[in-house]
Image (cartoon, rainbow, N blue to C red; front, side, top):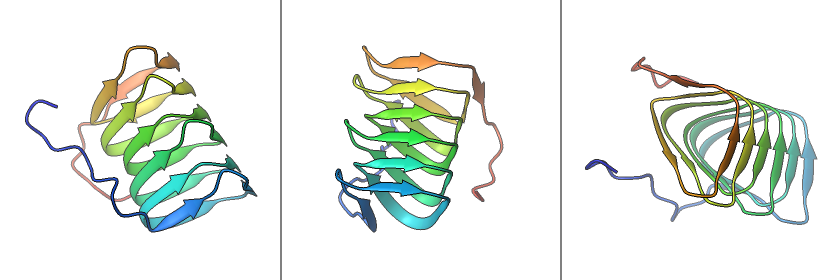
Amino acid sequence: MFGKKSFSTERIDTLIGKNTSFEGTIKAEGTIRVDGNVIGELIISGNLILGENSLIIGNVKADNAYISGTIEGNITTTAQLHLTSTSKVTGDIVVKNVVVDEGAIFIGNCKSNTETSTSV
């Protein structure tokens, strides 16, 4: 969007499958894809891809996030947050760039992150 490339979803470093539930804090580097359920915090130095039938109850920090499922918690990204038409986010977001597709549900506050730091 606006001449910038969106992040690549081709390489997945960590996968939480659709029949998997996890409770606790996840700290990861690279790209993580969640198709199951997570109750807890995700701290990612890299990208988060959240599948359509997935659920996260907890806060998310990542460089980029591509959300198609449900998040009940706050989201902080240092680069881009993309809410697809099937996403539902209940919580506040702090983002540098945000893309919201028609049909996405967002209940919360949005704050622009103008800091250039990439540490999560």
